[in-house]
Image (cartoon, rainbow, N blue to C red; front, side, top):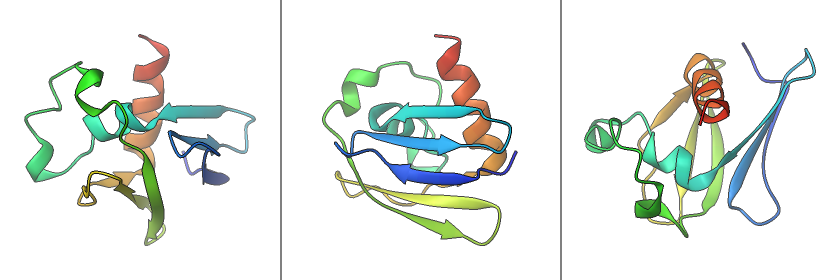
Length: 97
């Protein structure tokens, strides 16, 4: 599902994603950092240790074509490309916790 809007929260500690159907996802920066879909981050993908990235904020979000975003985190990580599908699945994962 393609987001209608994506913006960094005022504290830079979350990403707010709105969809046309009225769904809004608010994803903490530590959660996004933990599940960043990059080769260098693959060891974290099976972890649930959010404490590892507590305090990591979002510096910038940039579009990648019409299908994804790249998130620049305060710890220097910026190689994960979050597709629309992956972001939506992360939002559902977060709701299930």
